[in-house]
Image (tube, rainbow, N blue to C red; front, side, top):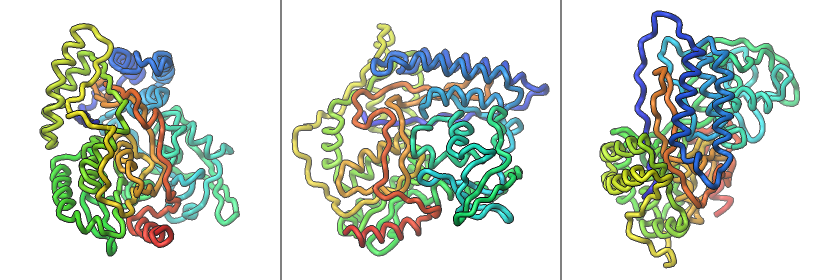
Length: 485
């Protein structure tokens, strides 16, 4: 069965309590519940390839509880849960806060947005009177900026060893999210054109345009799901979302129809661009269908089957996980994935039987017709250059998309290094006792997945420019076409 991911239901904002909450008690209660939920359901507890996981989980609990005991605010409550997630160091495990608006801390900035490029931090854009855009941020309060990022950012989230996570998240070292356990920088040294300048930072609530600047620094402009000929012979396919709502599903359906109608022109194009900016994962079925329209269904299917011939999917058969899987069927139908919904419905009884027998694992059966992985796959129908625009946060189903696109030698990655994920997948998000946080619990794991645990993609063309606009990517792609082809 193909990988599918289910979006967590959003937690409605709870009314504010009449009295100030006991944040330390609430944090400790949620951490203990998260620990128990993870221990009972996470595949890592019984993963023969990861015998260190139980000890890591104990460490996550211990460190999170230590911070919880010092929490006196909503931000301290949230940071305690973040520490749990950071220790597990996996985007598919841990917890996240869902604080009601009245408790959420005010986000502040120092008057500029930072951006990580390559191995350094720079000023992306600056308000009037701030440091010059393009300045390299060398240090803050005497601490090298790399060390600052490790403590202020990756002390509270996963990804310290993943290059793409730095491109996506290092900027947060110079954002104040209220975390009382992470010292706020007061003075930073900026270097521009070889000249260094120390500046005292002035922190204030983010302005209305902050979101636009932030998004521009890590993803550029947001294009809707669809296809457009951005330049003569260069067809741009935008896929910013793999967990689409009803309108997104309709947009993908329209895209598939257009790809079928334009098949001949695409195969004689100068290039095709597959744009993954803003993509945070979801279901790999959307990218798989795009690939099948471009290269051919059998060309994709046989290559993918050969690549993953040894891969198995092992589920943790627990009552909590089963309850979530039962809900997949209706949700997949709502997303227009009736074929996958029917497959899930077939293995639910087998899942139930595994629980009844007290089995540690339920190995997902393959209900698809067996592929002849020893047969030579047909030649791909698309042979023109295919550029895949990769953002730093690309993980989960976004990585699955690259796995599929890279089955073909005409695929060129441009952008940032990707993020990475573990082999633990398919999360559910149970509410924690406070009502102001949810857990992140993976329910299955891949065994013998071709892309290993924590492995990311390195771009063929690293987009080190601050300008991540579509127009600038187009310029880079056109220059590469001239140079390479």
